[in-house]
Image (tube, rainbow, N blue to C red; front, side, top):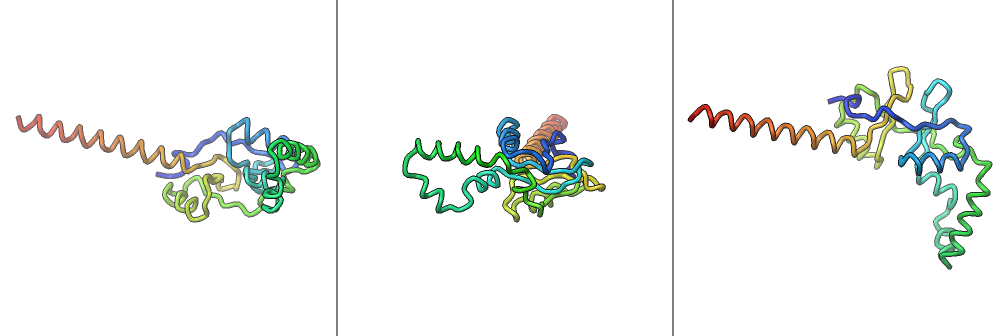
Length: 167
């Protein structure tokens, strides 16, 4: 089975000029974990994850620990930090080194890449390096489950046909 058989073709992408607040909105309104950053020809330039956005707010874990003095103060400071980030664009927080897969890659190879790199999803590129989809561990899990369930059903059917022929 190849990646293009199970990938999601509806991909939420952003441009390098997308604002910080629009990045937040895209991730949370569309319920995605990552946003591929593409140029006007839909070629992959980078990727932004939820963690990248959080890191832009709190780049140093010590500042997070220092902020745990009170819940109300913490939310107020987070809101202030968000307001200060309005000048930030996708190009400022994206990872330019993107682990991706091709549409014709075997699914298990894509899964092993996700596991080895500790990623939950990979952008899927066409031969022209355009973003044409995304594949997640969930997509692979569902496809394997579906294939296994159908295989078991086929095996049960074959066994039932065999026993009915013997009678």
